[in-house]
Image (tube, rainbow, N blue to C red; front, side, top):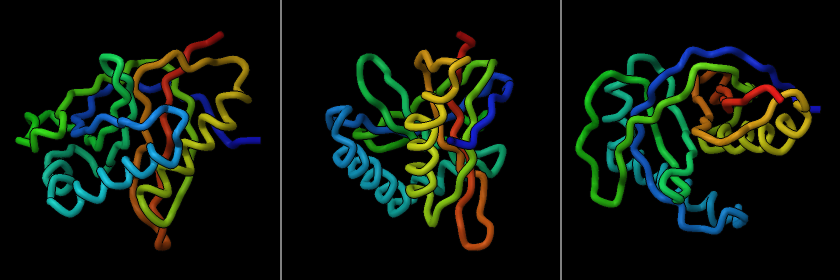
Length: 164
């Protein structure tokens, strides 16, 4: 049984720098490699630090969303600042998360990537199927990296849901 909660959240906006995931949506190994390569590049070329410098808090959002029939993956932060210049191969987008109920799964991992994989897997693989009173009907969802403690990265998965 997955450990999750349903939480009311105010609407919020995340500035995201993203990439289109080209792997088939059932190719988890391919998708995970694309995501890993994306985050490694963002970290190495300084883009992630530039994005974090614009943030209004310490949270880093790992956002997945279908946009114009494309599977998009973003690194994002809450900010009111304008989007920074990015490489042509990347997309900058203001992502609106709606006011309403969210399925929330807490977790931790050795890295941001591990945390994201753990909370995403638990949320979609266990918590949503068990939560028979709510449904995910699309829209952006995010693993939210909230900080570090005891050598581990901790955070939550936030998935907007509606009552059945």
